[in-house]
Image 1 (cartoon, rainbow, N blue to C red):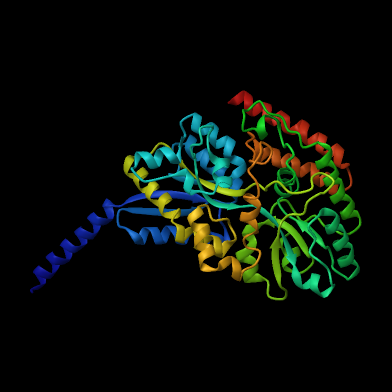
Image 2: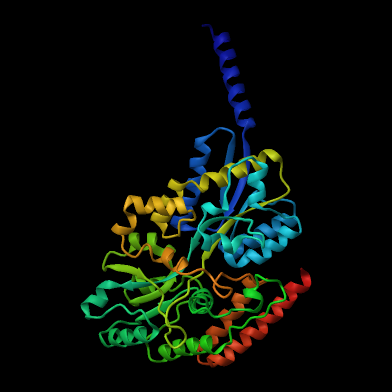
Length: 436
């Protein structure tokens, strides 16, 4: 072959590659997964891209949950929205309002339009109920779902001859013994509104707000200044004064307390499992159910989820939605979900994934990793424990955080703080109701 033929053949090859590349449809996936979780999330997109030659998913980290949701709203207003955005559970009411205004492409409708088999019954009931409309239609795809558990430093408990507590009275008793043994701050927690108010309430079948915690409509009011919650917050304040509990921040900021052995009991997301396996080398740990306040209820009801779902946004071409549906379906695969749950601690979103984890022997080999699923499926959810759907709840959580921090600093009593949180929170609810 002479040089002219070689040049011609090369040009044809380049043209063919360019045509193939041009034929691929690109979609944007904005997420809030940082660090190790972000690497795994990006890997899903890479794996999907390699599995076929029609679609390319660009996985883009946009900051924390609040920053990602804010960025997506701003992008939509500018006509530059991604095809998929990850939104945390407390943004559900806001996204549902956006769906009513035509900004969201409900996932059940997207799948139907694209001819992809999709059955809500395949998903864990405690997960999909949070993200479905009143007819039971799933609006967004569950991706990373978790629930609070109590993480326990088993080594410290065994060294001090202590039983792991199941009640709040037991937590205080164990914390006092551990404090006497030199443990810096025996008890800790993170995401305080989610763990200490929202899930404490659901766990004890206590109303968080009227109208079925907001599921029944926007004309809802908070009820978190009830006697049980006030008493619980006051209990934590008393523990803090006694040196049994140290506040460590609003989100996961207090994680080092547990990892460094400063706290022997730490209530926060089950999704810390993967990170703990990598980071904790000096002691044995496990996760157990959240403690029960037997003054309120003899047995727990069920916990509620945290984490986030994937929302499809309108304003794109049909080819882009075909790729969007394919990618969401790819993420729901049982093996992929089982791998994700095993490596992170998030709850498998499908029944098939949970069954696969059981078949693999994962739960038997890693005691405690089934606690999150057990808590979520403990009982049929009630109107008080199915979750919450309050407008402006991102801002309301900030209000709750401010009021709780006033309790920890000693400037307000638990009752004063919870009354103020309800008053300020209800004002934000009325603003949301007026706007929607």
